[in-house]
Length: 120
Image (cartoon, rainbow, N blue to C red; front, top):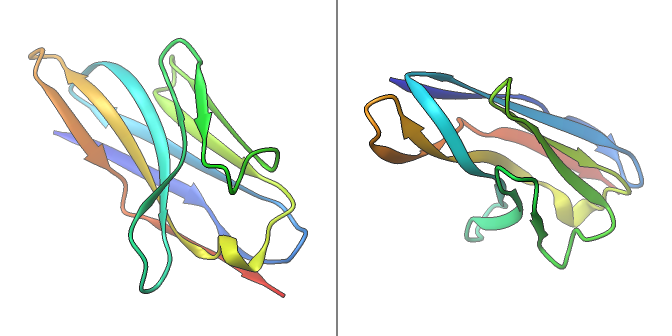
């Protein structure tokens, strides 16, 4: 019914940059908050950044000043620009969206995850 498809990620050296994208498709009326989470091996999934439909953003302290979240409402997409990457940023990154369906039901949906690996 609804699908979140992520792209980007990969392997980069410490200090480098990567960009993630996530596009939603399906029977969508609108999307409220969109967010990026990450999960490192042996750790809980954590919020990296979120952005409301109106563009208000929120960041984890660990990424403030280095990561930038943005969205394109017309394209039903959210982006994460990651600069000055550190080895501790290594994780699987997941897109999340608070979606209102055409039926007016509300669901939370997740992307499949994309690996980000930062080498020292």
